[in-house]
Length: 289
Figure 1: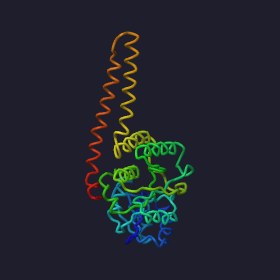
Figure 2 (figure 1 turned 180 degrees about the horizontal axis):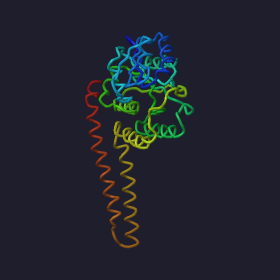
Figure 3 (figure 1 turned 180 degrees about the vertical axis):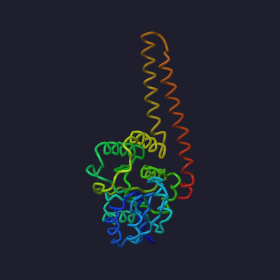
Figure 4 (figure 1 turned 30 degrees about the horizontal axis):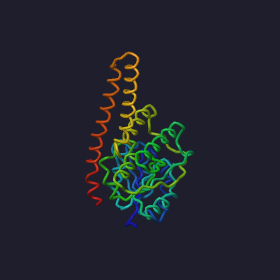
């Protein structure tokens, strides 16, 4: 299937979990290379990796999880990439299962966490909403949109490197991009263990992150599928309110005008976004012909 499999692990202050994780990965005959991206760690992460005999790509300061993924993807020499977290929640024994699915002809294989594997109740609700929205947008069953445990062909992953943010939403971006480009995506059930390290996600920003991911899901696939229902709902509401005020008072109110013009604006924004999205993937579509 491949000339080599590279396991790429973004890490920030994960020296403890890596001491246990790296030997488990090195025991797998399928893995030809391990690349750990040290994202500005202040602990012994780099030392642990060097002692384990794995490649280390260093960021002089923390650039973010997505930036570490991009650095690792560029540095890896294998034509198949396996991404996993450094905090110990992903089981190295699941790597062969993901690679087996690539052997079946899939382009992206995602390790899908069960309900009991979510970090907390609130995160589980948010991820469930993302999955349902992504399933609606793509017309495919998406069981874990935000999982960072995945296997993919390097040549295809690099096509979307410019789309990936430097923050934590790289899994969402890459998954939706693969669906949009017409590549085959599948999900393999996994059990994620409780993380050993300290979370670097700040809870105060989760609300904003939640909204950004929702719009990213829409704009990366088909904006009209997200904007048209919103525009239609406002149009019906405005039309209904106009019918009520005309019947009761015989007049057309400012609120009706606001609702109707807002619905038209949202529809036009979706239309423009649809054209921009098509242009974003034009080179990818041509390259896959």
